[in-house]
Image (cartoon, rainbow, N blue to C red; front, side):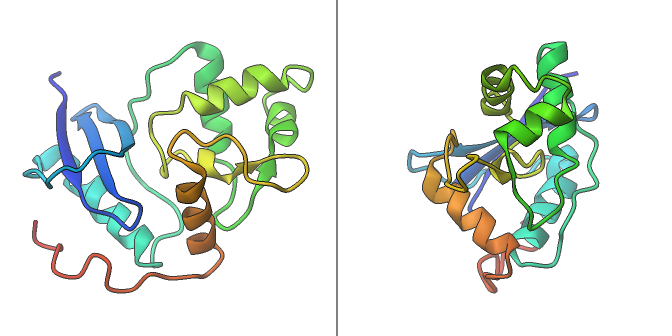
Length: 164
């Protein structure tokens, strides 16, 4: 099935979403300036749920996903989805969840290859010392997402975008 994509404005910059009737394939951050694009039907529910997340209303996502990766990556990404909203775990804890306690680097690498940002919450994984580390979208985005989940809501950021 052909992938559709759209770009939307968010509190953490432009997000590009790709997917099809098979599910969401990617939610990635763009650092370049870009305009919003028309929203294909197959991505509407994802955009709706992301807007609810950023407005502080949604704490979990209910979307069909279509991740592509190795079996190990898929296992790690599945475990990421078990991390509760507003909570963080260390890379060591994630490695333990996957049964790969001695392979923290591989788990961290798989975490970093996640292309379904926010929905598959790789931002909830932090260093064992409690510091923010390793986020492909930039540590500033990771900090904003974690603050949002800790109760720092951002009302009005999607005002007027409901019908796009």
